[in-house]
Image 1 (spheres, rainbow, N blue to C red):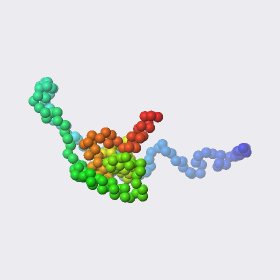
Image 2: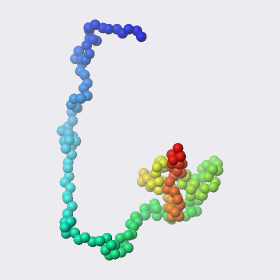
Image 3: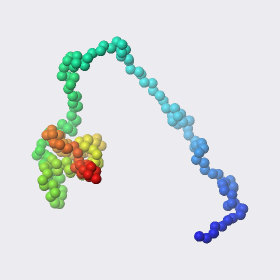
Image 4: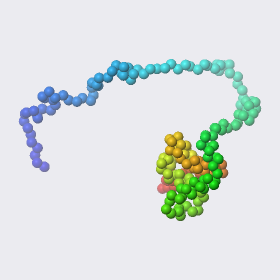
Length: 195
């Protein structure tokens, strides 16, 4: 390596500003001019007063009742589950017949050059769901149930096929095991467990 030069004196020997050049400091105040209205909005946001709810009777006034007495008086209504109303899409999906699902699948298959040889042993509903799993335009399928993925795609306006929802609802009524889990998710979880 060649020896470095040393300079003696001159402008280069003095570090920092010598000839009227200023330095940049990142630890000082902000010198940018900001309107006072904007400063007030950032510094002191408006605080809305929240009304306090009316208090119930004091604990001393509460009457202690055993749970068995409440259950006897309430009857079966206490133990019923609250079932949410069906969405419009779920109502439409329940009206779709197996013939319509088969027609949808034949339309999907007609776009291919060759038939799916490796899926010959699967029924149409499983093929529809697997096709939905690998359709990337509806978002990722890993770590998300098929129903939740379909609903998410619907909320985002991606127009997922209603036939997929119909298959999910029909298989759920049949009690088919693991219908909500995507095939890719099953494969990846089995690899993670065995590794």
